[in-house]
Image 1 (cartoon, rainbow, N blue to C red):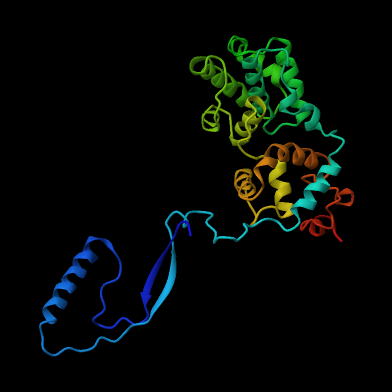
Image 2 (image 1 turned 120 degrees about the vertical axis):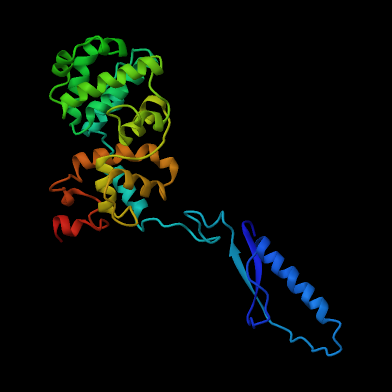
Length: 304
């Protein structure tokens, strides 16, 4: 049995029983006891040692004690009805007509631009999208792309003009500063391209975990994780987290612990559109949802 070692334990340990444990200290104690036994063997009075019964136990190795370790053959936790819930959401999203389907980050760059420029435009669209509706982000990206959106063009644009171009995205003044700082870093350290790891992306000013994971997926074609405010809300409503989570990042970790990896690339866009059309933040349209009978939150949100 891999990762498991068999140990024996005595059921009765009297005053003469040897020390427990291992290590040099225990070894020295055992050698001392063996020497003492050797001296006692010369005594003419010999007592017959009582046979002790041994019980067998299995001790899990340190490797198996790590996080997520499970006994062999024990399935991991997963939501009871998640497969049917997912099929229902796919059915409801079959038209692909939510804002994210036409105006999401994967649609907000110039497809005729060189690959490096396209990746930069994807990152900028994600930075603009924070706390901003997809329609507003798409409008800002159109205005930027019309002027030729590159690292150099942004660095040559004064802050006032850049603010006018991206307004009315949420927190546009802060985003002007972050876009300028990030663009300068990309020019100096990455030759105008964007980093190819989540760790490097989140180190850029104004780039959070959600943006980084989406940039990896859209710009680099690498699925690195699941995270979105819609996903966070919907996963908790559907019972897709073992316990309630308080932030998108905690939801991401909870989902990735059980959701098959081959679904990660699909789940973000699928749930974002579902959250835009049906499972709204306020007044969700439970009456139109195929999961109404499967959703733990439906009764409290929309009544019986």
